[in-house]
Image 1 (tube, helix red, strand yellow):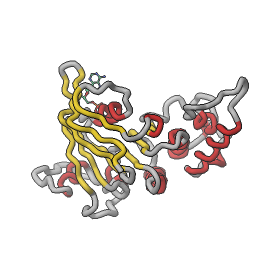
Image 2 (cartoon, protein in one colour; image 1 turned 60 degrees about the vertical axis):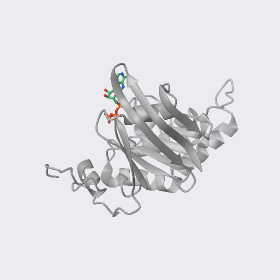
Image 3 (cartoon, helix red, strand yellow; image 1 turned 60 degrees about the horizontal axis):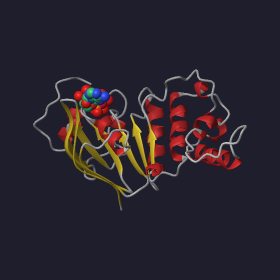
Image 4 (cartoon, helix red, strand yellow; image 1 turned 180 degrees about the horizontal axis):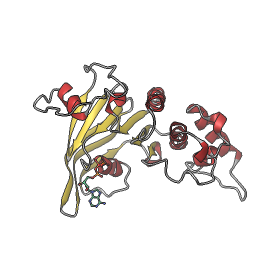
Length: 246
Ligand SMILES: Nc1ncnc2c1ncn2[C@@H]1O[C@H](COP(=O)(O)OP(=O)(O)OP(=O)(O)O)[C@@H](O)[C@H]1O
């Protein structure tokens, strides 16, 4: 089933053309990696799908409600000094929270606890967000996005500044979630991402879609990471070459 369809999308910021004639379909079982150089237009694409930016030219067809698109933004490590618990962060994701005069309704708390359980963080419900590791904190933000029972989960650089083991744990979680919801990840962590994504969209103003069905998995982790140039080469864009050492 097609959840989201984008047709001939073009977007300008003033005179800067950020996206040109982009076509993309996101289906319910997808695990899509969106990659591309800095300034290539990845965030712009995400913001248009999330309707944070207006549609200027082209079509955006959504077969799901806006509330069924879960979003985990970039930089969830900011403001870790804020004295708020993991449970409270998740409760903030409730769009139809019936707030009581003091605190939250029991059904909201039960739902938030169940989201925390889904990401393996229920034991940390009462911990301050600043006392968690980067990977644990990211799980809490994923739980927050899961609160509205999304059909698609979009994550912008979910593993930035998380160690390799933590990154792998997050992707294992996303793989598990992908059994019931579509996953779209913007990331530069290609080595890890490629062991999990089913398809890749390379965005550099225009979008080139590649299926990863036939690409060899078990890409090396750690220092021997795969760079974007090598990835594109593996996908058949052999005119590109990589001049640097890993
Ligand atoms: N608010 C804005 N006003 C003007 N230009 C913008 C704005 N946001 C983005 N741009 C420009 O649009 C282009 C695409 O930017 P975008 O942030 O979508 O790229 P990106 O692929 O997400 O980059 P990064 O990997 O660095 O996050 C860039 O040339 C950028 O300078």
